[in-house]
Image 1: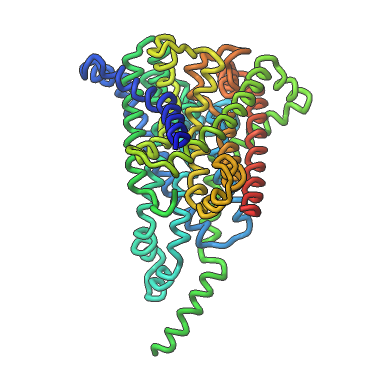
Image 2: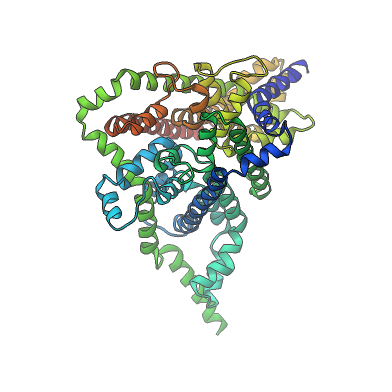
Length: 263
Length: 278
């Protein structure tokens, strides 16, 4: 029995020192002088701009990955084609790539000095050091999340109901809206929440492709780093607390939405 | 009439299930195009840019002292982190599955926090507790230990989350039988539990290693990015991009991609081995 308490103590101490105390301390530091300094810090023009830009980039990235996630999951589960295993492997690739490498990869194709990027530039579309590049980087890093959340549920759901609807004369679109979508809605919501959290919190890839211009291409995570490096600790801590609160909220929502049979 | 529809339906269903679906080509085309434009072509561009250097120049780019030092630190620290995770992750999973104490489900939820928390925030919170003004009087800022702590933070969930489900499924009758036959708790763990957990432990540690090698945000603040001391590979690449050394950045990025690729293959082998011995 003594060994049981010893193991429990070691595990909890480790988690306290690594996880709970650091995150708790940042909350304490943010609010130790009351609410007013926090509100001042998050209400500065740069902070507000960073907040709205973060939402804008995350919105487009989540939208694109949700459409791709549903379509891709239907493709992988319901359709048969050569090279399916390869496609499935390639979809997981973004999880293994360093965020900085993601940024470099996008610059090497869409940068103004590269053929494709230069061509887009002449058409009036600047990708790198601009919002489109930041959206691309964010799509890259959270690409597998929605598709991997939807796929197992779609597989479990089976095809019988869809076939029945089809037999009864429903069009493909009607079948999808009335049968498939309601069946996968919780898994889809779970994937979207994970994707949104990752998109709001992305730092490395966005740091490379954004050019980090204050008040222009600075997202909330870049604002945290910039404020900290410029010795504006209250602003860094306040923005970090906002991001940490979003993360904890995500955990709770994801816990509610998570399919019950998976760990 | 009803007999006709009854026979028609299965035929059509079989045709739908077996033959190629109408629209497969279109859907596949769009999916491949999306994946290519955002992931595959850009990554290929990185490899292509460093392949164009030729093998000798490529090797020189990686062997530049600061790049080589950053790569060695990254691989060394990641190996250490994977090893520490192997022990601590398994221990935490064990406590979460086999122990009962108030607040256990809160702890269980908290394990995923490093996945949800932005990496720059992870770095900042660690610096708040283990930085210059540490309330614990433990200053790890600008040290290699700081790098390892940051990597431990972001990789915490991997081993816990791979071992936990296996431990839940484990048949406890066998353990009780071993103890009835006189085996000590340590022997039971080593001979009965550990062999069953090992594939999951290794798989989790491999994922943690791959993540640690790629990590950028959390180490950025706490390490101070001192060349030849605390600068990791991702930060070295970042510095080269900022200084317009795109070829050098591409070469080190390719080295990281190769490491990630090798780890993914090793993980696949571990999974197959686990299925055979599970």
